Image (tube, rainbow, N blue to C red; front, side, top):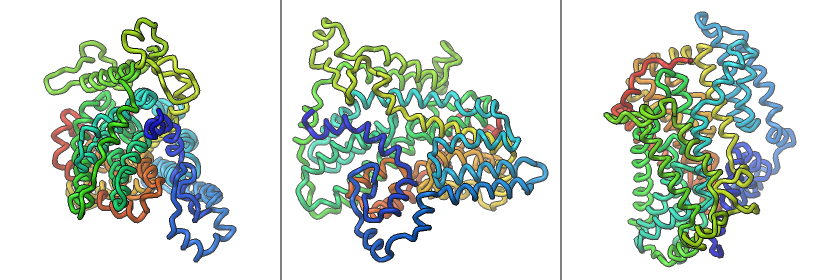
Length: 580
């Protein structure tokens, strides 16, 4: 507990909440209001940007009216929203779809609020529940059934298992066990950090993953001799990218994947949801390729072309292992639970000739129910210090100390009072808002109308898919990836269907591209965490992020167009998306 990485791992959860609560809009306001201040006021540790300070000295303070508008954006957004409603409700986009105009008004107003974050995403997600009934598109009792779907509870289960992993420091043990086997070769050490973060971010929040890894990474960087500052800053950037890339691989890895699962269930209800195993089969190869690209690019620029070899002090990782102590009872329970849960998720549905266990045992079980079945018992399993004394002696008393962050004395593997602050309710609301927007966009006829306009583009399947990937990739740099997926998923799927392309393939393309956010600090949690260290200038992040964006667009678009259709199996060519 005395080592900095051990202390940092216990503090990382509360810090992760601070970062995840910081919206891009809040960061922008802080920069405008105080150009020479901290780069990330709520996260702490941000460095002052000399170029921004110099610019502020040249331009002087903002005029009073401009500062007021920056701090009170609703003075602009609310009248603009009212204008959009009045204009679109006064015109008719398509006589055959009389409600398409009202649907466009709701979509544009919600998108405006999401893009500008005039209110937190969580609150804006409730706006369609008011506007759709108000404009006569759908009743609230219909929309409320869309707000919480079975895939929402898949993420509830993901939150529970992630909180258990973080509470008992299992993630730090995973990182340490992988990195310490890399030896003294610097490229393998970098690969070890990236691989461990990539694996963890498949199952827990990528922001929490990078924060919990940061103390160990900082301990490693502090052991390097002077003269390697450029390597140090870009090492953190590469590890942050690994966290973002890892989230692509599983349905619970990032919220955009959960929104995809929601939209698929709404658009093709006869399929009873998208298989967990099929999603991983489609997403994992792309995630692996992007991870390899980042690792090869980093090693080529900062290691293999360097004039001198960067030494590695292996004792740093041995000290980290000793600081972690023995494998505890709580870590055993959480590890076993996670492994069993992953196996059940993968084998629940049909895989080739294997029918899937739920078709034989519990036919109505889906991924969300399976996740809850395996995570709710963690609230009953006692932690090591609550075990009978004979069992503590059998396991070893040093494995039953039950050292957890926070002031509350742990009783069980999961205690609600200890983890409730880390439970991300806001994500569930954004899921619901995205599902309602997708349903309303289809129900009103707007998706079909927009799709018909886009269908006129005289481009082939491959070029159109690359264009979609390109546009979504750069939109998600400045807009929440959840909002991007919620707004564009239904429109692009409908467009693909009208053009005669596979809509599921295009829906997955939007899902993946919504996670290609590598250029800007506000584009994603890992980017923000790395930037807040003060070691990464925005120009450096933008330069390397743009290169990775372009690589991800080409690689992701080509993979989705040429390889992934063969992996979709029964989900290929399902027909046009429908609103159930």
